[in-house]
Length: 283
Image 1 (cartoon, rainbow, N blue to C red):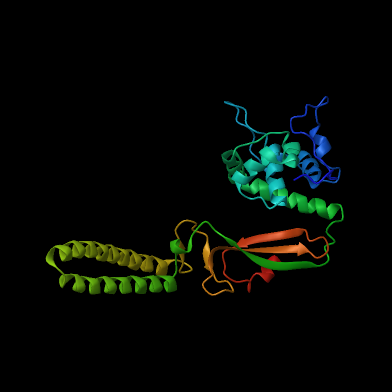
Image 2: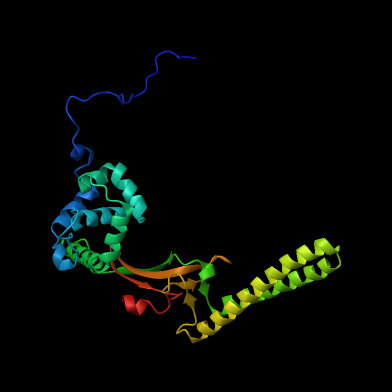
């Protein structure tokens, strides 16, 4: 049912043809932070910082400055995944302006981050130096705190003495349950009992094999420097959190931020599960 004249702001027709083409620069305000990223990266000596150049042969690659701008823009907007950065390059007007409408695939972005880790760190240091020079960091008071970051290593792939004891106890309890079921199967009719007994014996053998693997891992854990082993991400460690049963396997990232501007002036990635000994290092 129509209600007379509707007084709302109307958008443009999607199929309307423009006489004059749009300029991407018109969609990025003069005070937009991506303009700072653009100027900052263009003034860097990427070769001196350690960024790898394009290959001399084969298909031309992306300039390191383009990928660095994309990476820093993602960092500023809390977009960390290379796949999400690939999507942003194809739909975000700010990113299109920053990269000149280039849209690298996720593997190119991930490889750039992996191959230029030290150079990216050097860029961060250069940014802190610049902030000091323009007066954004007063060098008076800093705040230090730690944050837990989850690794790609799941809790099932992390082994410590306590975790191994718990898993061995669980396996032993499972074997006892299956042995009880075997006794029950023996008292049933012959054909049904034989099928069920075969299946239960296979499960018991698998559990015993798992126990042997856990016992071997327990020996390896005892000889490890910090008595902990992570299979997927060797540097990650199990860390307790406030909630019961909510521990994670990851890293403890220490950060020192300027009290006024909140700019991070120093950071350190550790795999200790506590902050007690980190204050002196950050100082």
